[in-house]
Length: 306
Image 1 (cartoon, rainbow, N blue to C red):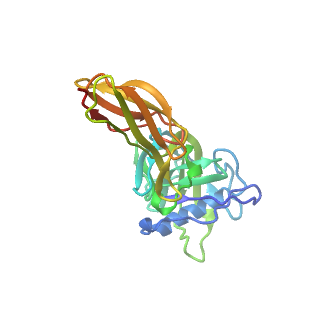
Image 2 (tube, rainbow, N blue to C red):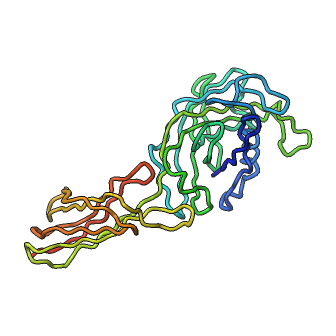
Image 3 (cartoon, one colour):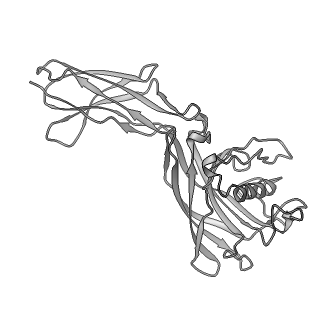
């Protein structure tokens, strides 16, 4: 689930133009929008890795005595063009004695963000709030998730790369955000960023076709293929150009591939390499990946040498 921030210079604060909720997540969208509004209000005038640390201003929620630690998430999140990606997150919530984390209107949510904490380029949440189990009178172990819907326009290609983890918590304390009498200053809020790092990567694919089949010993085997990666803006796979790709060989009856040479993908992502046929075995291409694109290996193509 995404909040894409349209950053505006309002007293140096973060202004979220809208909470973007994909159609696939329509159920429960209102509550997610409410949480986003609270975050927007809390970040007015804030800086650093927490939303604020003082009492509430006239139009802000008050700073709740809640902090977060031990944030765990996958080191890389590989996102294609259509399929939803769900990433589990765990963390520890520590709270003051005056905070009731069992209240029905207390919510805590992990998220990841691209860019600065107060002025993120993009934020990804989960569809549902985390669940927490008390481990002492002031600590709890929490489990949540991040949901990514690439087909719903949640990501731009420029979003690929390093992201950071954060967690927020909201205590509505009986306040109804849809009511005309809603008083945001009676709502407790805590928000903490830079808890962990992860990569959001454009899913990659790599093919190979080796031939001729069969081939005479000592003759040339030519392998062709294509390296592509997800284009999140067109929801298609496009060639990944000018990238080093290894030609590898595995002799029949063995389990290990050996690199024969390295070639580069062309302006369309096409890859071509030649080698001398010596043994029966499997030929494949291997791409080691970049910060924006994960490593990938083609399925080996068997060539019979006669």
